Length: 81
Image (cartoon, one colour):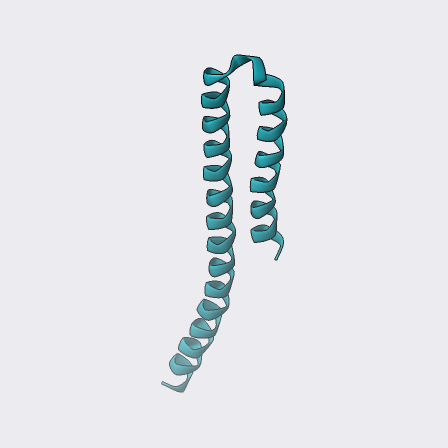
C-alpha cells in the first residue's frame, strides 16, 4: 500500500512539472497568435490604403513593413521571455 502511495506522489510531481511547461507553451502560442493577427491587420490596412491612393504605394509599403516588424517583435518577446 505504501508503494502505491509513493508511486502516486511521484506521478503527481511529474504531472505538476509537465503542467508548468504547458503554461509556457500556451504563453508563446498566444503571443504568436497576437502577432499573426497584428500582421494581418497591417497587411489589410496597407492594401486598403494602396487601393485608395495608388500613387503613395512606396511610402505605404515602408510603413507597412515597419508595422509588421513591430508586430512580429511581440512574438519574439512571448517566446523568449
